[in-house]
Amino acid sequence: MFIPSTQQIQYFLTIAETKSFTKAAKELFIAQPTLSKWITILERELDTKLFIRTSDGVILTKVGEHLYVEWSNIFHRLENSVAHVANQHNDGKQELKIDCLDFSVTKRKFEKVYQQYREKYSEVKVNFELCNNSEIFLDLVSGNADIGIAFDFSFENVQGLLTKNIEVVTPCFAISKSNPLAAQDNLALSQMIGKPLYLVYEDICPMSRYIIYLQCAENGFFPKEVIDVKRMSTLLSALKHCDGFSFLVSDGLEIDESIKQYPLNGHNKVSYISVAYLPGRQKQEVASFLKMLPQCQ
Image 1 (cartoon, rainbow, N blue to C red):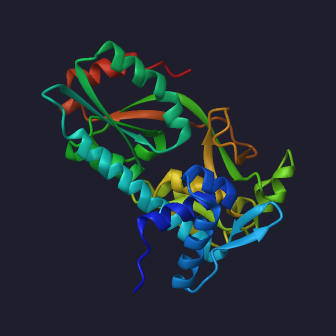
Image 2 (image 1 turned 60 degrees about the vertical axis):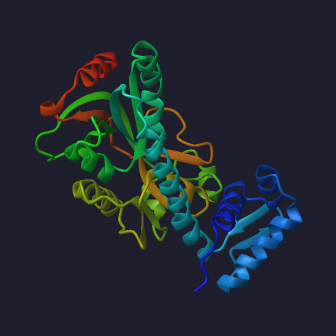
């Protein structure tokens, strides 16, 4: 069975993200003919086309879209595994382990606090990892993380966890800006009939999935196809290159320059970015971090 090399996967992902062989070649610091040759070999080994050339560049085929989701996740796991190994060398310092949901809204909110904490408590080694909800929960209960940062519904019905709400966020649905529907300033969820729905697979909070399905039902349809991915970053990457949609939350700023967000009609700000921790294992480093967090407005 053919197994692509990490180099081939990286080439494929870069072309998919830049939507151009020329731009990808520049980012990869290789000649465009060389890059084209590698993709031709990859397509031949897989016995399928991965890209369709257009006047504006290239777009992914259906097979290409599927591989993009899967291979993006593989690369993300490789990056996290390398970071995990690096974090094992703490040089005898006090340590604070933080798991943060891999999503721009949560990362953006805590980036400033994270930097301020490192500057004020330089004697503490801070390990900051991007995770999905399931990983955050498991790390918290197993002691592999001191603090978890995600949305409040991620911690619903989880006994023993204490939470602190930090910021109110707005539920919305999102599509790629390359989708022709994105030309509309006002888009209704009902216009997503027949479009695939992308979701991050979660076994910790099934209620969030139920609420999403209920939203679709209230707008007169059930998703034709539900595509599960393992990480929010993978979901956003996949969303850029397809005609599907997803449900996200917004803090009023753009999540990604390639993605357009639309508020859900009739919904006010009902969710929060939250910090969760186990009180029984609360270290001084955790208390110091919590004190630096802003108050929820």
